[in-house]
Image (tube, rainbow, N blue to C red; front, top):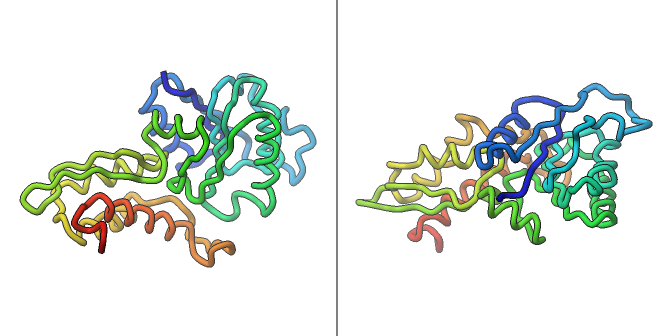
Amino acid sequence: MPLSVEVFHIGGRYPREVRDHMAAQAQGLVRDHPLPAALPLIVDDPEAVLPEDAGGAEIIIAINLHQDILDVLPRALAPRGARALIVPIESPEWIRPGLTTQVTRECARFGMESAFPKPLCALNPKTPILMQFCREYKVGRPALEVAVEGGRVAAVNVLAGSPCGLTDWVAERLVGQPADERFERAAVELLHLRPCLATQILDPDTGDTIMHESIRIMEGAAREALPSRRTS
């Protein structure tokens, strides 16, 4: 049975797509916890904000949470069975500088693994529980397997894809594309059609936008899927 998952968020389309895609992979093992979006700058008792039924899942996905709530999650949820925390960063505004290090330490203190992928489709786990999670749910940094017939893509199998489901959506629409550089271009163009929900706000850490990083990741996955393009 796959690892159980709880998604904590403050609402919106992005967490809904993550929740729905995860649930489609393992019905009954993904629970949803919307939290208040409007909170004071300092939350005196962050554990009190968590729902009474929170906890029990092995994988916690925390999306755009208040810093005080994010900081308390390891202490609050590890005793209830949480084994790993994933904090996607789709915008530099989602987490303040230094908090990643602080929460990583808290996770380690309570025996939890942690990951802060920026964006979520950059998730490339190196620890056992997160590797198991990605394997069971077929999520993580996108990886495609392509069958080619007559110079065109006959089938696309998603070996791993973004937890928001965008990789799968793109893959379905790549069938029939020419098996050359046009396949990569089509993958990028499709990211604009759904579209990718990573921010176009400039990330001070990279000098670029997180959406552009998402596009580069998808383009690379498409290139690596075609044997004729891997060395180009």
